[in-house]
Length: 459
Image (cartoon, rainbow, N blue to C red; front, side):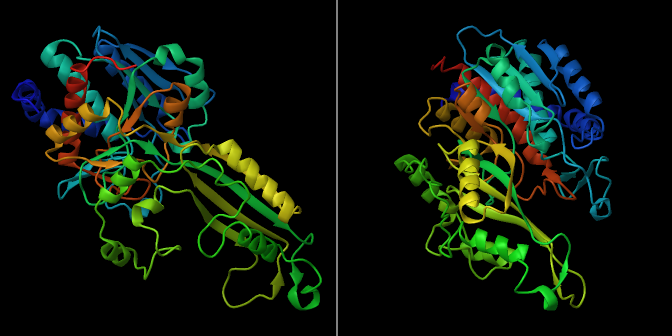
């Protein structure tokens, strides 16, 4: 990195440091506004707040309706010859329940031991707020942005992003960019800065087995009437073997071999297996025992989320249940698709246990960006300058985001630059974000746009 670039960033970083009390107070004001998409509290107010802010920054801004909660779409295209960067985030948050487990009120941000505690501070308000403050900083110091910027803030990510795919397909022209940057999720569990090139997809479904039209006495009817719980147990056993391989026909057909760059990146990630096992209270990881830690997070999975049926109360009740339900998800990798996988699961269920009802519940396709994308190096260097360390390269995070709408529908390289600490407790009580990570996030946004502006467009 040349001194010229660092010198260009120095006054911007200084401005951010000078504005710390102001920026922190404004973040607190934002966090005090609930925006719970699950039941709608505060959604309209927060969306309107974002529109007003982006309007003041000189963006052409609109509140874009969907059949659910609206998206905030803003554009400022005043840097001819520079890349157009789409910044995505989501303004909705999870419900705060259970309230009794919060040490301070979820919508009254509080600092304890260098961390901000509030619902949504890590997921995702604090992170996209840092991105917006980066834009504000660049405009305040230079009067313009170094890159063309599109901001897209969703209001339904926490309920599965049911309408973003249709919106992106319909508004393709308004979202025309060269790359996408998303500040979301936690950094690597070691605490190191992180640059992620993809996300796994997820496909969710429910299996429902029925027996008699009411619960039966197990002595009078056991061995005569079918037991829905056993029906589901045998079906599930036919879907995954004891060595951890998913045995649904065709499940792995579209899984591409991992490339050399991706495999090398996985092997370079630090991990303390003993510490993780101790932290989780485990004696060993799941099968196969020989699989490396990060290969597990880069491969497809089949998870039973919950199994419900029969009697679960105190002591015993000799009952043969009338119904059993199991809820499942599958994490998908590059080239697998939700519709394809759900169709294969449905076909397998129909073959093995046709009496079982298969209920698809949708999901998100996986998304991947090549590690050798021309935009990767300036983003990596920007994160190193802003966060003071070389970022760890993660080919794809273990969780899921609606990134597929950018990589597949728009055909754009998409990068995830998380600003939250690894133990942010998102979706849980006492969600938190380290104060310093918030300010490093603002500096990261400034640095990324600055370095990207120096490289021109690579379409």
